[in-house]
Length: 69
Image: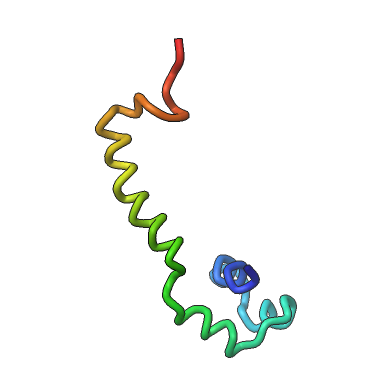
């Protein structure tokens, strides 16, 4: 979680102070960045690429954006 926060904020703030503030090691951060995504994250990305086009094909008639009468 801490590494993800650093990754999200690194475009706006310098990274070394965030390491210190969040109490993470430099080597731990870079090791985290090199790791491949978790199996669950890969599955979610794959499903998203399949579900979004299907939702568009149905003209968004199913799901939370569908209007009810």
